[in-house]
Amino acid sequence: MPKDESQQNLSEEELKEAVIAEEQEREYQSDSFKKIESQVKDWLAKQATDDVLRDISVGAMFIWSSDVHYECFEEYVVVRFRIDGVLVDIFRLTHAQYKKIVERLKYSSNLKLNISNIPQDGKYSLKIEENKKIDVRVSTLPIKYWENIVCRILDSSKAAIDFEDLWFFWTSKRMLNKAVNKKSWLILVTGPTGSGKTTTLYTMLNRLNTRDKKIITLEDPIEYELEWIVQGEIDEKNGFTFHTGLKACLRQDPDVIMVWEIRDLDTLQTATAASLTGHLVLSTLHTKSAADTLDRIINMGLAPYILASALDTIIAQRLVRRICPDCKKIKEKTPQDVAIIESMMKETGMSVLPTEHMKLYEGSGCPECNNSGFKWRIGIYEIITLTEKIRDIIRKWGSVEQVIHEARNGDLIMMKEDGILKALKGYTTIGEILRVV
Ligand SMILES: [Zn+2]
Image 1 (spheres, protein in one colour):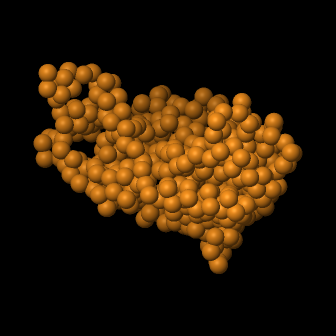
Image 2 (spheres, rainbow, N blue to C red):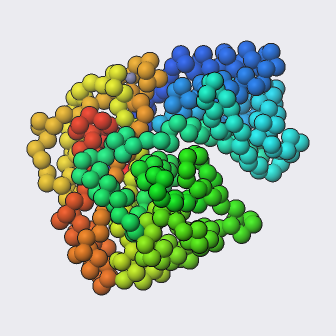
């Protein structure tokens, strides 16, 4: 049977799995990986461990990675980078080579050198150019074969971005601009770890950051230092929790408060009370969608009438890989692509558009994207702004479906829908949307 006919008989779930599998088969390969490996091994041979740490971090940043992972096996250690959210093997080290790196990393980040049987975490700064410093957060984990280390690279220059850089469509950008310009209310950014919540929150803070306002943040940990903003770091062991921190913030006469995460009802109640007493409160929740967020808040025990009066906007989001602009080409649509687009349109309630003139795109792979066809990531979003009608529905709390139905009558675009529109514009692929949402 020809390939296309067999695919037409697959169920929707199987079609999705096939597309995701195809997407995951793409392999990152690059001369940059070999270059980093040879530099690092040269420095190791010369015992120049300072240069090793610098070259690994700079090399990782050069190929836009966020984390460096050292993973120990019986015979060797693998160095992996997280590139656009995907872990990629870069090169291997011997145990003897890794030992030198472990010692240097622990020394630099003030960890105990002689301890490898309990987890430790620390941080160090690295000067990479005359006027540029980056912070690296180091965490160790004892495992069967010795000790794994993960280093997160925090590049402050990335924090100062604008709404224009977040890939919002026009209506979404208008909704957000309106939300941050209000004096009070609660704005929630939601999504799993690694969905770009920090970037969105920092972008909003950046927009609000003028000298006539007092902005206080409670973070765990502080990822980027922001000029003029008062940043507090949570220390639960010593009683500095989100809840106690938030109460203390309110006594500091703030205009805007960013509490990194709402984990319990106490924090939620204090955050909503702060919004009701004239403060703009920004926070995050670990929920999948805008609808899921409303359900979670009600289940946490907040009274619907308080939620209706305190909450202004929910932004649910994910990051998808962007098609590499250097090797982007039109993709020939397969019957499975068409079937997936049609099923996603139906599922999100989009009007099903004729698919024959729709264009899809893909990256064919080039040195600029380490042959993966993708370079950098973009956000896909679902944004609900509470209108008076929606507040009424929440006050009477029927069901979350009623809220979504009413929001759909207004500006709400579902996350998958935002994704499909971005795929049709050639920013990403349908496979990425399926992989991430
Ligand atoms: Zn490319």
